[in-house]
Length: 304
Image (cartoon, rainbow, N blue to C red; front, side, top):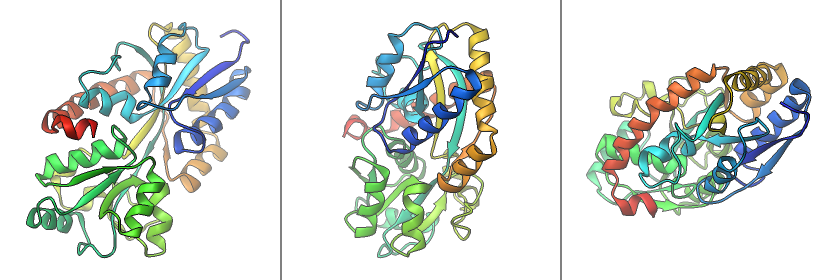
């Protein structure tokens, strides 16, 4: 790395979870690497605007992308027509964090568990609708996975953010959704939403009475292990030594007590400290899983 600033691209606007995470890492990486790190928000087109900016940059470590899961594995699995290959077109640097999500309903929906939700949806085909943060967002794909795996019929209503989805379910406009824990937790705690399950295998500290999906007694949902994850990638063909240097720097930040505390307590996400090889292997394993979901979704579901 030279002394030039590092540009950290983010495919979402300011204020969202990915942006908040990027700004925290940018701040800490400056001291670890000894060069300025500047966040560059390029929202739009399911992170494609930011991805294109990354792909046109030289592989010198000075242009990086903090990407959410939908750009790295679920999107490339579901959409066969993306203008990039998530394995060939990036250098995979580090996994920053995995984020649990919460499945919830409006309290008027007569279900109290995932099992009851599935039974109710089967008994009332097409009656339930669900919200997502937009076409191609993590919760769009994860809920389609739920539909396919449990063979139920739900109607998709896209919004613009997880916060908006949680408000709409609380207001009764839509019945059901999955969002990041951050968006749902306050509304669950005040009784405006009823939580059914948390993704993954651990309960959330903020929602101790809500079972983890692994306890929900629905084996078909085992594929939904985290709501989303956040990873750092660079342009293809970065030298291994540079990838290593950046991986070590990121993992150092992920171990800082103030970073761990902020992620766990205020963002409800789990810091990770993986090798770059493990991060790449994870993406390699995730894409085929989402390809199966993509095959089961019809085209109007994918783009509507």
